[in-house]
Each structure stands twice: as structure tokens, then as C-alpha cells.
Image (cartoon, rainbow, N blue to C red; front, side, top):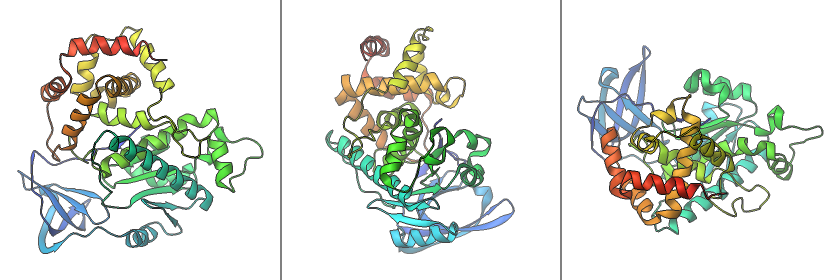
Length: 378
């Protein structure tokens, strides 16, 4: 199960970028909360969207605003050292493992934190190399990328349940658009993946355990969420902008399965995702509705609906796979258009469909070729 959190409550907005730091006091659940950050958007109803120095996004509805002021100093992102200190205060007893791009905040073994850091850095390199070869200009993250790793599912659920609610027991890890963090737990503690005699004392043993076939979907989920984090921090996509879920989720699925038996992690980016391919073929055989492509690209509803999400995720992967191979120039232009979307401005279904057909042409013809080409994939 995948989840990206959209916690938006502000009305139609007009972008307004400012160098000054906005100091805001808002009232939430009967308590006053102070927030300082870069003002990104001022809404028509005087609500605001702020980016704080730790990378969190704050939506400030006008009814929660108590007072605010700004100064002339630009907002400076926290350094790795400053953010690590804040994480230690927030999560007493946790250690910090630092890599080039990541802060792994953990109360699990150091070996597991190191394994996570190495895996994420390999993904980061593979992801950025993939898009740079396609002449898409990504940038370095403005903030250190944070992953919070709990020792076990119970402590993870106690922490993440505040954000995920009842769904927390079905989700092993997630990336939050609001906090800009990944949250997960030690996958080697999942009973279904353990065998008699397993130990977790070294990265090699961890890698061996999680390279087993029964662990593939579990690891793929974490890589999927890590892909979202990179995409939203390196300029491929913008948090709280209208990025269609079929594209955002399809890209994450495209990268989600690593080769843990290989030291580089990814030998063939975009290899056929056999789980999603099987799901798509089953969906085609049902049979697939004639308007399936139109409903997928014009709305996020199918991907958010638990009853339809399995088919929708399979089709989202298949559509990205098809377009990357069969329409590479158009796909790249479309992704670049989406990367320039402004925050808190949402297209309606007709607008999304129009933007898609402008990029890829007649929907009926494209759909016929899509189905025909995917029937050849093995």
C-alpha cells in the first residue's frame, strides 16, 4: 500500500514568493503554535503556505491565524548538524546516521541504519543519473533528506498513527509531503521475513535477508517512498502542486524494485515490474473499461479508492513504462510541464485531460497502441 499525504485546507491561491521570514502564530486544537518560515503562497482568503527551515510545509487557514509578522532576513535551511540536533530533541534516545544526502534518525541497530543510508544513496544516484541522461535538470535538495527508522512495528505505529490513523497497521513506511520525511521501521524485524538463525549484526546479513524473494515487495515499498522523497526534493515534482497521481505513483513504481544482490543496487532501471504487469493483464482481461485511460489521467480518484487502487496502480505503472519507451520526447516535455506547476492551484478533470492530450495526441489512438504494446511485454 502506498501513501503520500496531501493535507491541504487553503482555498484557491496565487503564488507569492518572498525572501523574508514570516513569523506566524496559529491556534490548533485550542493551543497556540509558533511557526517561522518562507512565505510561498498567499491565498485569496488570506491563508498562507509556509516552508520552515527544517523543510516542513505549513498550511495556515485564516481561521487559525492569530498574528504574524515578517523580518528582512531570508529563511536559511537548517544544516545537517542543526537538523540532527532538532531530531534528537524530538526523538530522545534516537541516533543519527549521516550520509551525503540523508539523515537516518533511528533507534534500531547502527548496521541497519547504515544499510538504509547506503540503499537510499544508491537510489539517489540512480534516480538523478536517469533523469540527467534525459536532459532533465534536477537540483540538489535544499534540505537534508530525513528518514526516521523505528526498531519495531509497534513503536512505528505509535508514532505514525497520529498521521496515518487506522491505516498505520497496513503501511510499513511512507513519505509525507507535509513533513518532507520518510518514516519506516526495521524490516528485518518482520516475522514473515525471518528464518531460524537469522542475525542482524552486519550490513551483509541484512542485505542477504532482504534480498530473498519473499522480501521483495516489502523492500520495494520503502524504495517507492524514497523515490517520492527524491522526486519532490530535486525539482522533478513540487510538493502541494497538482501532480497527477498516475504520474507520481507510476514513476515511483518504475524505480521501486532494486537488485539487492548487486553492489550498485540497480543494474537495469525500469525493468519490467512483474507484479504490476500481472495486475495490468488481469485488469485487461476483465475486461478493462473503454474510458480507463481517460479516468486515470483526468482524476486521482481511482488511485485513492481502495476498491480500485490495485488496478489503477498497475495501469499507472504500465502507462509510464509505455510512454517512457514509446513516447520519450513527449513524456519528458510533459514531465517538465508538470514540474513547473504552482502550489495550491488545482486543475479540473477537463484541464488535466486537455494537458495530457496536448502532450500525447488523440486519446483513443494512444490507448489502442498502449494496450497493443503492453501485450508484448514479458
